[in-house]
Image (cartoon, rainbow, N blue to C red; front, side, top):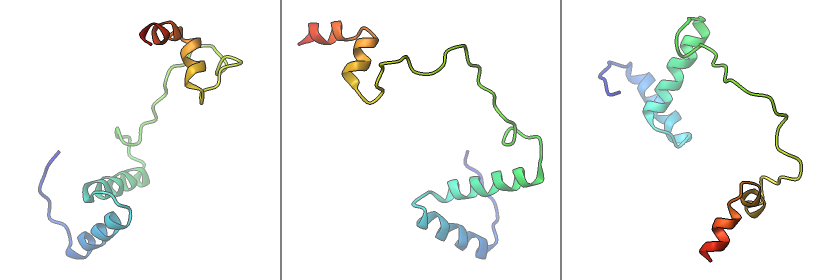
Length: 87
């Protein structure tokens, strides 16, 4: 969201330096600074609420599945039939 604010000149220069050092945008640096402020204050805002993602059973990757091997993954997913038919 675009907005206009007045920022102390020294703080703005420091934020620009931090952005350049981190190869990030000035907006990202300011966002992070505001998040840190809100977390520090312990406010119950959307920024500080913990998100719990639902999970269901399972115990990880099926044995024998190598997440680094695309062909193996395609075979497990049944995609090799499609890949071979296209060749």
